[in-house]
Length: 81
Image 1 (cartoon, one colour):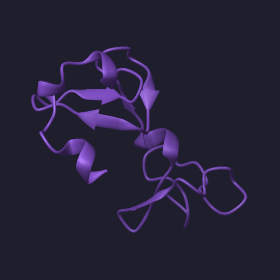
Image 2 (cartoon, rainbow, N blue to C red):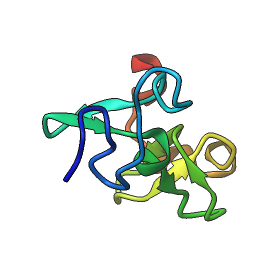
Image 3 (cartoon, one colour):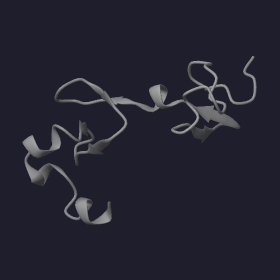
Image 4 (cartoon, rainbow, N blue to C red):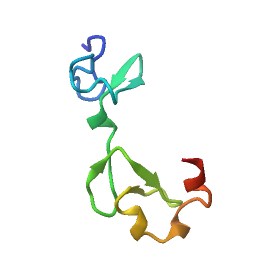
């Protein structure tokens, strides 16, 4: 049973002072910790919170994006950030 402020994925505490408070997000009447929010980059396979999604649905991290063909991303992606 999850307590208030526990991550809905891993059950870790996300309350103030836990080290997970700043980057937690609301999820299903509780929160999700930053570690559980991370996705794996489809190029370097590192986990990241900062990523872009290609037109074919792949997750690409900030470090790998410059190595990609810009046509793999929406035209105005950089303008909206």
